[in-house]
Every structure is written in structure tokens, then in C-alpha cells.
Image (cartoon, rainbow, N blue to C red; front, side):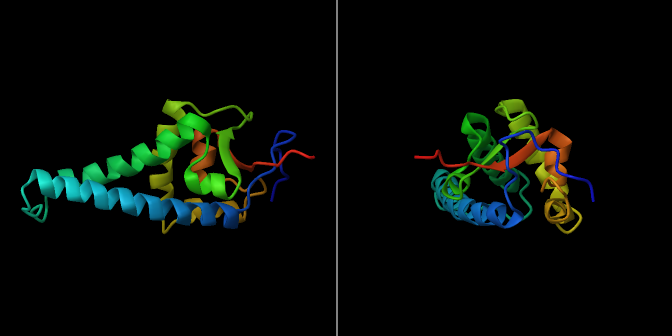
Length: 148
């Protein structure tokens, strides 16, 4: 296992803190999914989306991508991350920006494929970074409270 090479002042967030923030965010994302689904049903005048329709799951994935990427690009924190005082930043500690935030979401989907191994890799990584963090040059760090 290699040693932590985090820049000074950027303490890696624990996997458990990241998981807790993700659980918060999933609750918000579930609410957004319900709202989106109700809007689709209203647009279709109450008719269900036929099974096997490709656009509905793609649209739900788009909602999730917009949720996570939007928050990461705007301030590095989703609502759950804010509650657990963690932030996603570039390797050098700078803000992500929209292209890297979208890439991180896509890389996160890839990291899920082998039974989530790419996400849980952070348990074993000295810098607590998952595959998606490594692929996109990002890291999740603790937001330290200023001293009084």
C-alpha cells in the first residue's frame, strides 16, 4: 500500500463519510425521480410508459447526471456532502468545473460495474480514492471548520 500524497490541507474523507453523504443524496435523487416521473405521466395524460422504452431510463440517468454533476461543478458539494462536511476537488485542490464533473459521474458508473469494486477501492487506497477519482484526477476531502 502506498503512502498518502494528498496536498497539504486536503485531508481525505473516509469511505464511510462518503457513503453517508451518498445515502443522503439518494433520498433527494429519489424525490427528483418521483417528480420527473409524475411530470412524464402528466405529459402522457396518465398513460404508463410502455415496458422496454429506451428513453425513460435514459432520462432518469440524465436526471442523476445533472444532479451530481451540477452540484460538483458549482461548488464541489452535493447536499449530502455539505451535511457530512466533505467536498470533491481536483488533485491540486482546485474546483472541478463542468467537464470534469460530468466525466467523474461517467467514471463513477464504470466503477459500479464490477460489483461496485471501483467505489469500494477507497477502503484500500492510501488516499481513499476510488477508481472514478483516479480516472478523473479528483479527490474527496474533508471540509475543516475554521478555528475560533
